[in-house]
Length: 310
Image 1: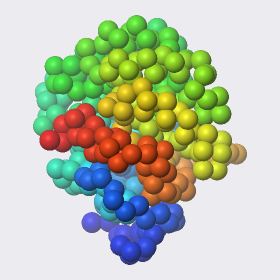
Image 2: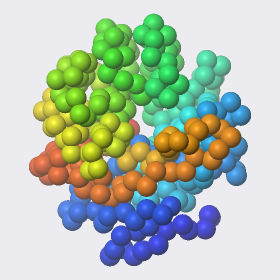
Image 3: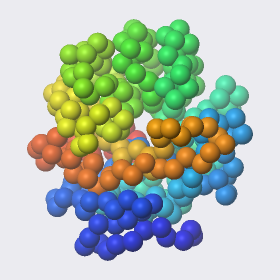
């Protein structure tokens, strides 16, 4: 097991990778699920040589420490782009965490049906199509990628997860309606919080949510907000909750990779994690959600159905 990078006690904030996480508020519904984390272990599983960036290590052991700090009993590990379509690290992390973990993989056209079946047995429940990180915002290409992914995983009862922006979601509304799988939309649809609920494309996101065709991750508020505590993201969350609270989940986005101002985002420079307090983010989300009933849906019941924990 990797040497611990955390400090603190069960009664006080816990520091991991230099970030001291706020203690979760009392009465957290359980077993709550963090539906968006990554595991990065290049010493055991080398990164894709064609990756666009090089993150530092955040192992399965680090993840277990992080989940304990947040008081979350379940977790969904999402394949990071640094590994391309090599899902060995993901599958190893699910095994190390145990029955409380599920996964979302990234596959290629040559991924065999047998490999998909093995991933299903291991706990994978979806496949990710990452358009945003690779600048693939052309609707025709995006539609082809979605259709291809959905066709491969529909027989397994998996979903397709997409990271893209509102303009692409708006352009693909008809394609999304026709998919043979549910669609999970990452990080609030990348809706700029400062533009509010009336911004172009947000109405389409709400309509898709009401239809039950899509799920939205209330994750990455720091990715869409320009305010220190993401207060401008609250109206987006409220609108999504009013549209369909049964199709919302939350993820911390730990360990928070991403570009830094003035630092080249390339594979030649190790990318340091952003210092996000995930305990505070979880507590803030609970305030935004309001009622215990809504908190339980987003943090417990909805993830249990989507990722088949039960």
